[in-house]
Length: 202
Image (tube, rainbow, N blue to C red):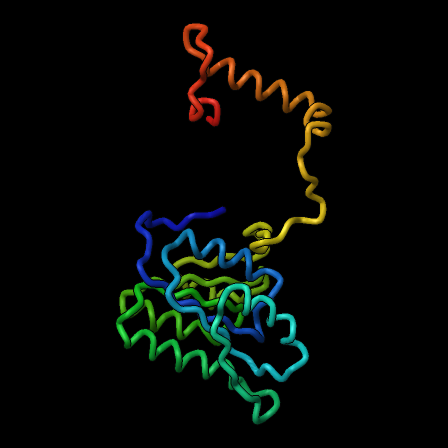
């Protein structure tokens, strides 16, 4: 997983998600990565929750305790959700409570927002698809393509192809057993009966 250039972690990150232009399927991975940047203090997502195409967000919103912001589409084709997100971002910026922003979208309309936040001296990290336009990418301090962040397993869940380890399965995996034996043997000092756990783990 890619790391930011600045090793210092942020103390208070605001995450703003454009539900119309982000995928619920990749948000677990996005949140896992943002946690490597610092402490998450604000999580908001914007959309017209009466729309069928946004129903997939419900479980994700509950799992990550994201604050859903309702924005009705009064006129078809207008970017009411984008405007609401920008207004909220400026309120959060002016509050002085946050030292970094994460914009989860692939929409070029947020390029100006990213530039404005950076003018205030705060870093902006964008998370979007590989097809995101260049203007939004370069407006952020770093832009992460969600397809390249890897696959995150949601909390309290187990991948379908994961099998539980038992004695029978362990004995069948001779490569793993031999590797474990070698690790313990290499960690032993002067033929002692005990091996340092940290050395075995390394």
